[in-house]
Image (cartoon, rainbow over the protein chains, first blue to last red):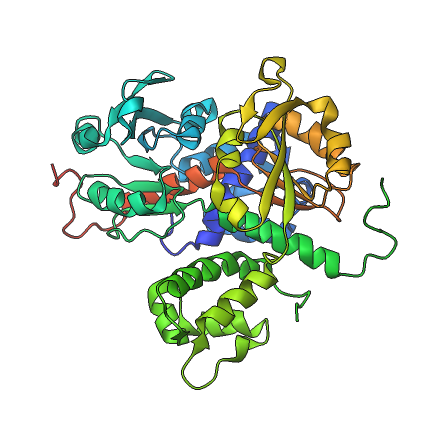
Length: 222
Length: 222
C-alpha cells in the first residue's frame, strides 16, 4: 500500500492526523467526514482527501471515515505497529528529558541505552538505564538490535558520532545537534533544529508587528 | 523589504541559510555563488535564487553573493537584530535544557524567568533564574516586557496556560506540548512536536526497509 513517491510534506502531516484521530477515538467518535476533520484540524478538506489518496483513500464511504480504522491504518503506515529500539547519545538535560517521555514508549519507541563522554555521569541512573561510556556504543548497538540513535550532543561531537553510528547497523538518527549530518543513504535522519524553530517564531512575531495592527495596540493590555 | 505574502516554507528555510552563512563567514569566505551554496546545503541553486528573490535577491552581482551582507540581511529579516525576552513554563528536564542553551542568548533570545506549578521546585536555581510559581506568571510577563513564552508542560496544562498568556501581551509561544493551541491571531505559535518528528523518522526507516535494498542486506555489517 505504501507508495515510494509520497512527499515528505505528506509524511510530515501523518503524525498530526494520527494524533487527532487518537483523540477522537478516545472520545468515542466512530465516524468523521473530511469536512469535520478539516474543521478541528484547521486544514482544508481537500488537503485531507488529497493526503489520504496517497494511501488509497482509506475507504471513505457514505458518511466519512471510520475513525478507528483510519487511526490504525495511519499508525501502521508510520510503522507504529512495530517496536523500535533506541539509544540516546548525550545524557544532558535534553537527553534526560527525552528518556523520561513515557509517550514514546507507548508508541513502541523503547529506550535501551544512554551514552555520554563525561566520566562523572557513568553509572548515573536515568529511568531504568545507566549512563554508559561512548566507547561501548558500537557493541551495544549490535548486541541490542538498536534501530535508532538520538543525538543530543553539541554539533562538533555529533559529526564524529554519526560517522561511528554509520558503521554500525543503525537505521535512523534523530538529530538534535545543530548541524546537518552526512551519513549513507540507508540511514534516515530526522532533524530537530531548535534554534531554527525559535528563529522562525521570531520572524513571525516581527512580521506581525510590522503589519497593520488595526485596533490592536501593543501595550494596551497593561 | 519584507513581503507579507512570503510562504512559511520559505521562512522555514531562512534559519538554515543563516546557519550555513554564519559558518562560511567564520571560515573567512567572502563571496559565494548560488551554485556553491547549493552544493554545501544540498538544495538546488534555483531554489536558493527563488527563496532569495522573495527578499529582493540580496544583490547578487558578478560572482555570487557577499557572505557577510547576506548573513546580516537574513539575520535582520529573522529579527535577530532585536532582542527578545522569554519565559519558560515548565522547569522539568526540557525546560532546563532550553534554559541552558547559550546559543539562544547569542542570537538575542534572553531567558528572563522560569515557572512551574510544582512547589518543590520553587526557588530552585536554573542558570541565573529561580523557579517561580505559576501564579506570578502574568505579572512577570507585564513587568519584564516578555515577548515569548516557551511551553514545556504536558498538553493538559498547556491549553490553560496558553489561554492565560493570551490575556497578557505575549507575542509568541514556542510550544513543546503535544497539542495544537488555539490563541488569538496576534500571537504567533511555533510548535515543536517531538513525537511527530519521531514518528516521521519511523516512517522513513520502515519505508526504506521495504524498498529494493539492492546489495545492502540488513545485518550484513555485523
